[in-house]
Image 1: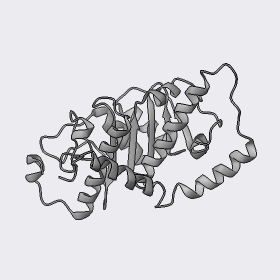
Image 2 (image 1 turned 30 degrees about the vertical axis):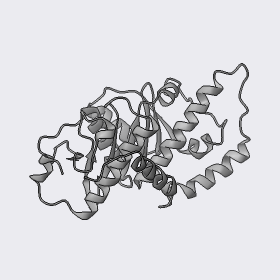
Image 3 (image 1 turned 45 degrees about the vertical axis):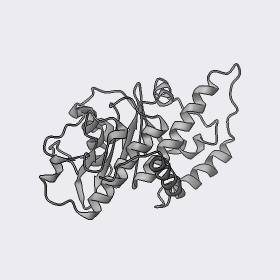
Image 4 (image 1 turned 180 degrees about the vertical axis):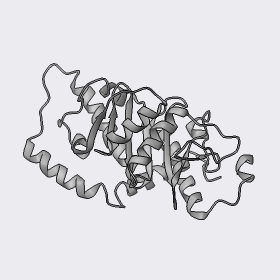
Amino acid sequence: MSAALQLQPEIPDAEWRTRCDLAALYHVVHYLGWTDLINTHMTARVPGEPDHFLINNYGEMFDEITASSLVKMDLDGSVLSPGAAFNPAGFTIHSGVYKARPDANCVLHTHTRAGAGVSLLRRGLRPISQDSLHVIDDVVYHEYGVPASAEECEALGRSCAAGSCVVLLNHGLLTLGQTIHGALMRLYMLERACELELLARQMDEPPVVIDISVQRKAAERMRKLRPAPEYGLNEWKGLVRTVERKGADFRR
């Protein structure tokens, strides 16, 4: 355990489990190649403490993050982990979502090439792939605002009230969920949809648009599937096993 956290009272079991899962998530994101050096962030709300969340210690690469190095903050911006650092824009984004969405227990934000590419288009995602049908009914578009400002915090909260898969225009992607694995599964499908969207836009002919009746049935199915506690769980377990086989040491 880090020296900073050794100075604090013993961490409750539920928080420690969440810390381990969130640290694992950072290693999974590293494995998937979704990093932007140290400049994106994933968070989890602390169990039983709805006004507190965990975020990466700013400066650590994602494959360096451990359960004890994660930073505990409150929704007002106070840091409860002595000696820790955080990304101010990260606080703005995540606190805004948690304030607006009490059902959200995990928020993921990335700057991938595919996600950032689609973010340059006003309403970039179209119903042209099986992957897009997993998310498109839940996609919202958020106007670019002044980073790390109170106004942006409030504006993002308003956008997230309308959906859990967010294209941050001129910026990147964001997803939220009731579980870490659920938020990750949303991001995976959103990322895939963006990749295929950009591929389609490089072709010399327009893409095939999926029939509207199929779109409606897919949306009905996903609205039932996404809130389920098991949504994305098997994929999550497999990814955690994968990073552990590659030597990830995050439970410390």
